[in-house]
Length: 140
Image 1 (cartoon, helix red, strand yellow):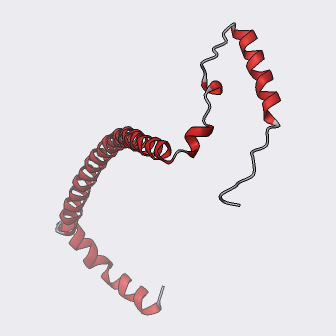
Image 2 (cartoon, rainbow, N blue to C red):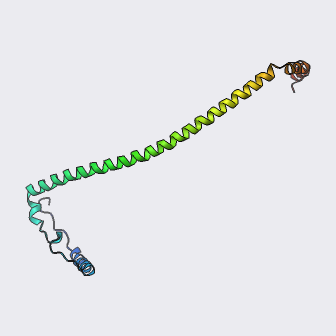
Image 3 (cartoon, helix red, strand yellow):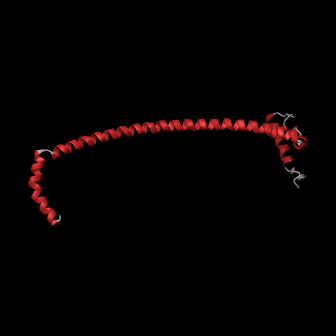
């Protein structure tokens, strides 16, 4: 079966001929030197031709694949670079916000320290100490 495969069906030939006729009528172009007039039957059975064709195609295909991969990787690099620039901008904005918050924290902490060290705070704590003690004992 492998050495004598069955012939391919030829049901498509009538459709093919009609399509060629329709396209030729539409475009006004009919070239008899197209692929459909090349007889591949003898070439396909010649091992040297097959080897030459597949090696040549493989080399061409490899080069095309590498060129495509290079272009795809360049696109991905460009996209990532844009994304990196956006992330860098966001990072710088976050750093600025953090610096502002740290400055506000330091300012509020300095105000709180000033209140704790003030004489009025200490006097208020001394006056309210008995009331706080009673509340702690009662549990309210």
